[in-house]
Image (cartoon, rainbow, N blue to C red):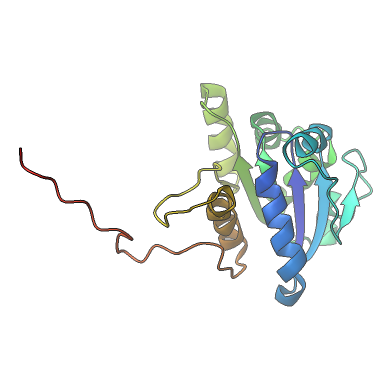
Length: 196
């Protein structure tokens, strides 16, 4: 799999870091090659929320560098994840406004009918956002709000992050054991209610 990972300027850099950590550790064994691109605000938010400069063994592209291979459908990339995805980035993607490499790469994924996963980090959702989500879903993308799950009784922030990243990896078809899967049985029995 040839995969593009884009980090936009919404809060949620820990989601991106966890996905990139997983791909750095497991991508090669799963046959995944990764290209990475940050928006300018994506870099700023990463610095604020993570601190360290991102250091990964992937090719990192500048967001205005349209010479990146995944800016063209002829390069035959298989999938793209924008994590986190700001509402502004989602709207630009939904309406084909390819003013930067992230937008162009997403446009390529849609026109080539490849997987595009947008991990939206925005709340509340306005009507503008809802219409952009509808537009991009109709065009073939997956919109995945960064909504952690709690049925696995996560004990740490990292465990909460994993519940979102595991679902992203699921959309890409990459096996992972980042979270306890729902098996139809509640992990804890409800407490009995005492009668007064």
